[in-house]
Length: 328
Image 1 (cartoon, rainbow, N blue to C red):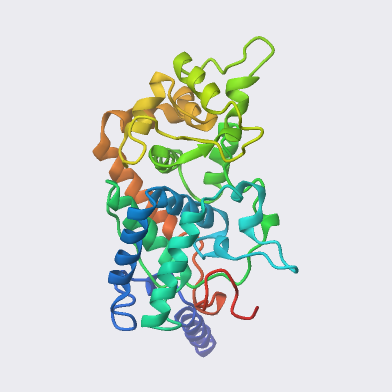
Image 2: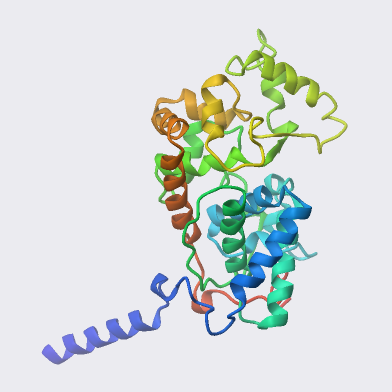
């Protein structure tokens, strides 16, 4: 009996030792295998951000859309084929800006020349997002490395599993909650809207035909909604028309997004809900008053998000190119 117990204990410990865990991730994962990793990422993102100042917001959004769905595994980077409609071609992802994809491709190309088949696309995306946030004034936070790239990417997984700005707040809260993120962490991550822009179609209902009695959502600042109507007037014919999420400091990562909310200057319905809903208002108020509190909360939430659903060991691969599986 004792020998059986010992055998079971041995087999259990053996299986645990053979199963990759998050402890295999580390901040210096590429120190020996690709010592130029950080330098190459820095050079690539700096050059790209200088020539295309929307790159930081684009990459941060790309990172979020990748991670919150099935984990931080680079699945959003895969291109569709005649045999597979990939995540990036799901309706909500069609508006992902090209600058985010481009900076990852550039970094991967440079890294493949320096250390072939070593660095995953998922790791490149995680570090590029962090470094770009820091570059435009946001907080630095730790990113552990060693993720593998996903082995599948399907558009059919996306709908209903990524937050949309038109969703009721309860539905957005449920998406985060089902992945182990609190309301406080959700509000902190929403502060990413302090940079970047949104297409007019994402908020058109709130400024043109809100209800039978009101053209405009009354939670908007009146002058703001008037300006939005003018800026978006041709959006049915020009779907690329867009507006900065934060009209005050659109290219700086700060807490202005939260300061805008009580003034009716939240662009998206989901933004304004952060201030009007009692479940989220406390955190939105705190981050509006205290940028340090927002930065600390954002950094912690991003660290947590960056290891959500990561693929390890045989559950993933190191892609040769970020937009295609190795066996394709």
